[in-house]
Length: 247
Image (cartoon, rainbow, N blue to C red; front, side, top):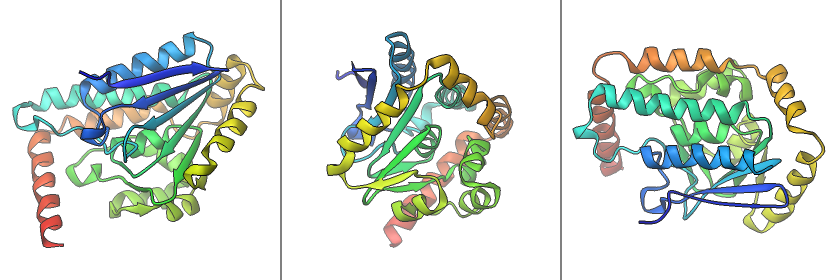
C-alpha cells in the first residue's frame, strides 16, 4: 500500500504531497494522521516553508465518504475534530505555509487550502465549501478572516463551485499561475520564508489572525454533534449524485 503522504525536505522547504489520487486525495483517517505527522516532522527537521500539494489531478476533494454507511455519528464527529485540529495547527504554525490548489479543492480540502499563508491556484482549479449543506460548520472564521465576512457568508450560503479567477478576486487564492511558473513562485516564497525565525513567524501569526482556532473547533463540534450527522451527509451525497445525473 502506498504511503498516504509523500514528504521531502530540501533547503528549508518541506514538500508534503497528499498521495491518494484514486480518491481525489480526500481526507480519510489515515491521510489526516499521516499529514499531521509529516507536518510535525517537517517542523522538527527545520523547515521554514511547508508546501502542501496533491498527487494526481486534484489538491483535495474534501472529507472521504468511503464506508460512510458503516460509521456512527460519533465516528464522524471524531474524524471531523481530527481534521479541524490539523487545520488549526497549520493555520498557527511557526513557519510559512503554502498550498497549491490544483483541480478541485472541495469541503475540508478547501479549508486546508484556506488555512495556509500563501494559496496558489493553478489555472483551471476550482474551490467549494459544501459543508453547510449537511449542517457542518468547519473553518468558517478562518475563511472569513481570509476573504471578509460578507464574502465568506455568500460563499458558504451558496455552496457553489468557485473558479480559480473568482478565488483570486475574493482573496481565497493569493496568486493564480500556470504550472510552468510554479518553480519560480516556490523559490520566491522560500526566500521570503527564510528571512524570519520560527518564533517571530509564530508571533506574527498570533497577532494577525482574524480567527480564533479554539472558537472554530467549538463551532465545528456544536454543528457535528447535532443528531443525524451521518444521515445528513448521506442525503447530501444522494442529492449531489442526482444533480450530476440530471446535468
